[in-house]
Image 1: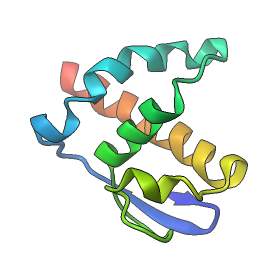
Image 2 (image 1 turned 180 degrees about the horizontal axis):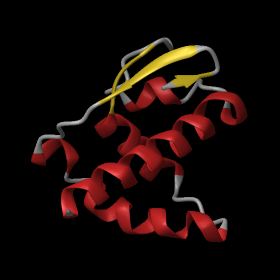
Image 3 (image 1 turned 180 degrees about the vertical axis):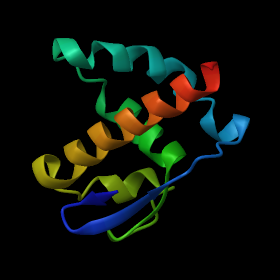
Amino acid sequence: MEINGKEVTLRTYIPAKQGWGLMQIIPKLSTLANGRVPEYDEIVTMLCAIVKEWGFEGDPDDPVAYENLNLFTELLPLFYGVAEALGDLVASRKN
């Protein structure tokens, strides 16, 4: 996926321990259609678990790396893109 001209690679395999924090966040993603966005720390937890590599500064596994992303052109598009990909990943595992 590309966000603001930067290439972002997502994990397709998420080890249980690394992804466990997602278990609290995944149900909240269904509220996005109602305009409800999870808390910042929840978004960063999700992104740290899913983003494997990116063209932004910092390590995508480090929560601090997300602090300086531009809210409207980088963080939110990244969040919505990852939320969609995560929804697809969860849906494909149910089949």
